[in-house]
Structures are given as C-alpha cells and as structure tokens.
Image 1 (tube, rainbow, N blue to C red):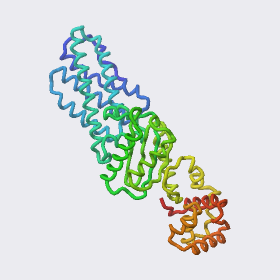
Image 2: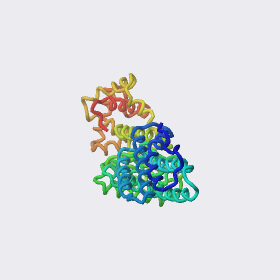
Image 3: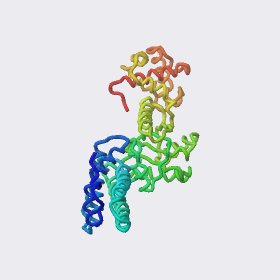
Image 4: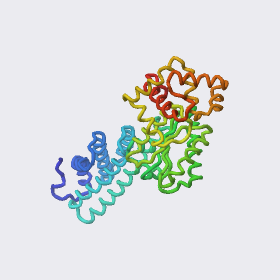
Length: 396
C-alpha cells in the first residue's frame, strides 16, 4: 500500500494543498479498493480512475485553474463504466468515502482558518463530482441502444441481472421493493415493434397502478421484448390471491391470451426465478397448455419429465407408435388440451365426430392408452411431455 505523502511537515498555503492532492491518489485508491467486499478488476480500475480525477478536479479548484477538463474526463469515464457494467454505487461510494479520507489526511496539515477554506471547497467539489458522474452514468443507460425504453427499462434489466441499483433507481425517481412477484410472460404472437412494446407496457403499468393502487413500497418494473416479458410487481402491494387478476389485466391490455408463470422472490433471487419462470412458460406452450397463469408448483411434474432420465425415455416410447401418423399426434394434443371434450376437440380440429372417434380408437390400439378415459389422461400427458422434450427439433 502506498505511504501517505502527508507525513511530511504541515502545509500552510493553499497552493501547496493543491499540489499535494494528486499525490494522494495512490494511498486513497488503495484504501478504497481494500474496503470493497468483492474484488473485481473493472471496479478496481474505476476506483483508481475516479480517485485520480476527483483529486485532480479538487486541486484545480483550490489552485484557481480551469477544471472543465477534469469534469469532462469524469463524464467520459462514467459513460464507459455504465457500458462495462461497473455499478454506480461503487463510484459514488468511492467519491464520498474518498473525500472523507482526504479530509482525515489533511486535517492535521493546516491551521483553523485554512481548514475552513479547504473543507468548504472539498464539500462543494464532492457535490459537483457526484452530480456529474450520476448524470453521465444514467444518461448512458437511458440512451444506449441496448436499453431503448429509458431509465425504467435499464434499471429493471440491471435488477434482474442481480446488480445493486438502489442509488441509480433513487436518482431516476424509481422506488425499488425488497421482494417482487416475478411474472414470466410469453405472447401468443410477437409484438411488432418497439412502439407496440412501449404502448403495451405503458397501458399495462397505468392500469396496474390505477386498479391495484401500487403506490409506495416499490414501483412495478418490466423488461419487454417482442416475444417475451418479465414483469416485477412488489409483493407488498399485491396479495398472492390477486396475482391471477394481474395476469388477466396484462392479457387484456395486450388484447389476446398470454402464457404466464408467477413466483415470489427477493431481489437477490430475481434472475434465477425469472429464468426458471421462462423455462416453465416454454414448457407450458410446448405441451399445448392453454393460455393463463401458472405457478411453479403447477408445472413441477412437467419440468421433472422434461429432463433427461430413464423414466422420460420410457414414457416417450409410449408415443413412438404415433410418430408416423402426425394427425394422430395432433388429435391427441387437441383432445388433451380441451380436457377430453369431444365437441371442443372436433371444433378445434374442424373434423366430424365420427372421424374423431375413429382416431381416438386408433390411438388406443397403438399406444395401449385410451384417450377417452379420464383416468388415463395424466399418463398420456406425461408421455407427450416426455416425447416433446426428447425431440432434437423440439418446438419452443
């Protein structure tokens, strides 16, 4: 660790203070890096750069020199840190803690009159540096091509990625909650454009706030793409019994059915929960389940059967005799999807009732399982899930 240069005799003149400040870069940055709970090269480099720029800026202010270049360098660095994924709190904490260390280092170097003048400059500089880095960092997030929907989209993406965005969210006027209901959603048809995405989530968010009164305790957030969406609703603002109503609202504002899976999670588990939710949404769609809201427990068996194992292969083998008769596979899927309702099945397939009965009898002869018998419905569903999961060209 670098040795403090202020172990020399006390300094009296402000010009000498200005000259000393840049020499503190090594000792201050070493201490700040040592205080980090996790060592990360990018964060460490950012701390060293931020410390150097901050001390150079403060030195220039004290010495009466121009400081525009220092602020410009800080803005450029903040943009780079935002692109690299360095967390904004890492930088803002560096500035605040670093300035306190500077005050401690300099407190014995001056008389009372000099202290008053220097400390006033330090606090003023800290405010300017903090505003500059936060504005540039958030500006990059909101205008970057990877975050077209602005600060809310950017912060939601970062929160889902597991990053600590409390400072950035506060600066953007967004209240984060401690725990959320995580809605993993798949649209039946892709949203055609970014304008359509903005329109849907804007309307949905407005209705969420209006109907559910989601005020205080966190704001609803979303990351929305053309085919999928992840919506976060604070658990403090929504009872579990009301999650189905939220899913219905999201579907209504879209104007068509959606497949959705919901589960509660704290901020640390959001990424894992969202990934599992989207896995289950794909599974529900692949299995031919109707649109609506599902929970993790509703699809636990399906998820287990979707993983490679001996039992999955054995179940998939039951469907093997139907592979050469695609229309029989389609009939089985449709019949199971309608809950074994013959009228609804013939309507969905546009076939005659006699044709359906003939196909169901053939399925029974080939598989040994009767698709007309409710008692065998679960086994047929399991076999279809196992077959679809084992296919190399399985649909998503």
